Amino acid sequence: MEKITVIGLDLAKSIFQVHGANARGKKLLSKKLKRSEVMGFFASQPPCLVGMEACGGAHEWARQIQSLGHDVKLMAPQYVKGFVQGNKTDARDAAGIAEAAVRESIQRVTIRSREEQQIQALHRVREAWVKHRTATANQIRGLLAEFGQILTPGLRHLRREVALWQEQSRGMLGILNGLVDELLQYLSELEERIGQVEKQIKQVLQSNPACKLIETIPGVGVLTATAIIGSFGRAENFTEGRKFANALGLIPREHSSGGKQVLLGLSKRGNGYVRKLLVHGARSVLQARINKPAYAEDWVVKLAKRRGHNIAVCALAAKNARRIWAMLQSGEVFRADHAQTNDVCT
Image (cartoon, rainbow, N blue to C red; front, side, top):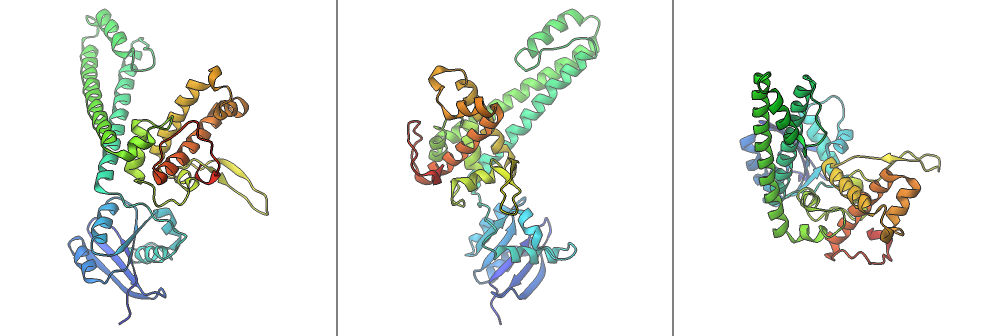
């Protein structure tokens, strides 16, 4: 019997599909598996390459299958899609995954550890509660605007201005005041929960040497450092800093043909949450340096004056992404006075 060298696994909630092929790509196996049968199936197979799409639950399956001696390759779904032939079925999806897995041009997605996934969970919960906090504050503004009270933008003055309004209108608008009190209480609960999550994120930073290392970069704070480690680990899957920046959508889209290079705006692909944190961090750095005589010769300040504020912010965010990759690979601490001689690592 011919040996199966690659297996494509189409993940699902209940019914999984597997596609096995030999070294020449010939189909040797195609079957459905119940969720309880998946690990038993891979335990019975000799070690081989297992391809999967990076989707919900994929990292846990990858860790378990990897523990059986298989080489697991997680791939971005958009790159697998081009290998699916004909109309969509689970069997064709699994065949396309197996075909994509053997292509060296399809880059692997880093298999996260459970610790890294827990860090990412902290960020996701915090982000959700921040959105709820913003929505609650906006609802208070909207309700009061219906009665002619316009509040100052931002959370800083919200409680004080609402308290002043309530003193004046409590006798006339008893129902609305009761609703606003409940919304303010919910807002306080959200702020307390966000504070607790941020405290846990800071504890992760203190206990993780990689997070503490990249936090030394200007524009990379607690949230950015822990989010990067939680999403990419030490970024070993990337061979250079440019590819890491590309995975964050911080390099230009290209539409070149006929020997003419055409660069467009940022691709904005990949991890949008980490990209947002890097851009916000770069914006704060530029804001702090833009009008300071001590930073008049800084490249990002001169770029901002020449090309505009937003272009300079995105350029600094992309440079920070490359710095992060280089520091994670070398283990060196960031030095502002370091003269870069080899442009590959930046």
